[in-house]
Image (cartoon, rainbow, N blue to C red; front, side):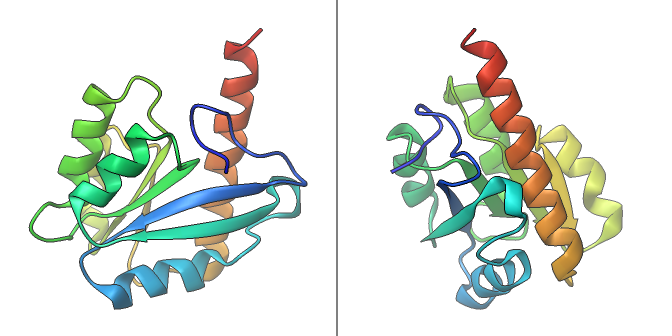
Length: 147
């Protein structure tokens, strides 16, 4: 099992992406948009779904996710607040992609310290590119931090 503590998987490995939303259809739309292999150089993606904040915190505490995709509109705890909390509480916090419903809400993702933002309706090409780039950036950061 990958994990933030163990570093992001390489091109031949599998990255674990945690998708958080209280709505199963939102989780499914994120998974469908990103796909199982967002780019050849980042390898395959295995998804773990979380419907509540406790599941997200447990996965992060255990280092079980290489990337988090959080629904900014999740209830009762929105992804933006979760992102901000994780950045302050988890020493080796995995990178975070937030999804928002309105382009005007992108600034809130900046406040929450997300690494990237996707706007609904999700474009599959853009979603895959954004997730792949965040995984690449995280991998590069992980490699330089261990030297």
